[in-house]
Length: 400
Image (cartoon, rainbow, N blue to C red; front, side):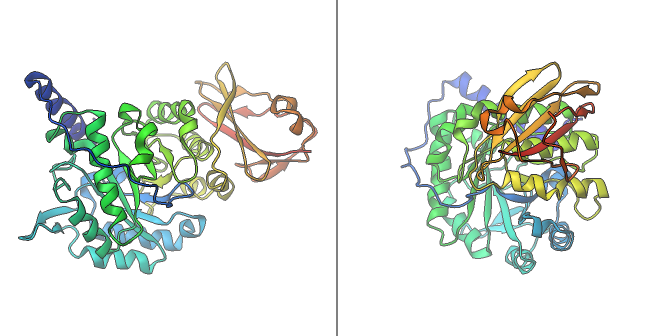
């Protein structure tokens, strides 16, 4: 069955667009000036988001539980610091128009304080529409007010989903850009550093104009689901957008599904490898309180996290594709190169890579590290791993 979020998004997509087309609606959002870069998120953000596992059922108790888990299971030390509440936290506005949490959450500042006390950061979700995707109160007409409220609560991250705004205006690039800029400017003036994340499924080539909204990351794809086809499509399409991603401005292929049960451990290793090589934000989406050892090992692979968090922020590119094997390479800030050999086929396959394919600097590497086996391999031999169905092998090669 489609997820609640997907159904809500489809409803938002279908109805307003049909209405606008039928009535020749030419309303436009007043022009907003470009918003300077915030200087935040020099590295891809890492943390957890509530939607993939909890959807509309998330509560404050769940969020506290995730913060407790992250503070004790090694995730915080590995770099996962954001604890982000997605849609359905919103209540009504008070007589002065101030947004209030609903009864599932109660005192939002107290929740943020709890997360901060664990050495973590706190994130929320909203929409430029009067309603969010799930039908809760959005920020339309209250952008400055909401930004100040978020700052007062101690919010560190805002995911801003365009879905609900389709009810206010026709879906055009100009309208999206203006509404995203409006909140970007409000956050800039709110008095607290808040990482700004845009969500609208990659419409209108958002990667080309997202930086002018003050955002640090933007979704480039429709919602991910916990299926191989969904994950691999969203990951590999980022290769065509590499020129638009780097320190402080990240392409976002959506959150991690690792540990949610819809894919195999090999497929989850592929997602962790691909997202780290791109590099993409690493926002876990599972129940961190109950994850098994295999899930923990995947999410806490420090050698892959180091690839994702490399300060140079250079994106991966495709070296070649042969049969079911896709070989990606990424230049690292220290002069090494990371090679990912992805088996997108339905059976195990042998991969082959000669060092001279990587250029003259790597024709005689001094060290080759297997990032999943956490072991050095013989640099005197070419790579020839056998990769399981939908699996991956990742190596870091140091030049001679």
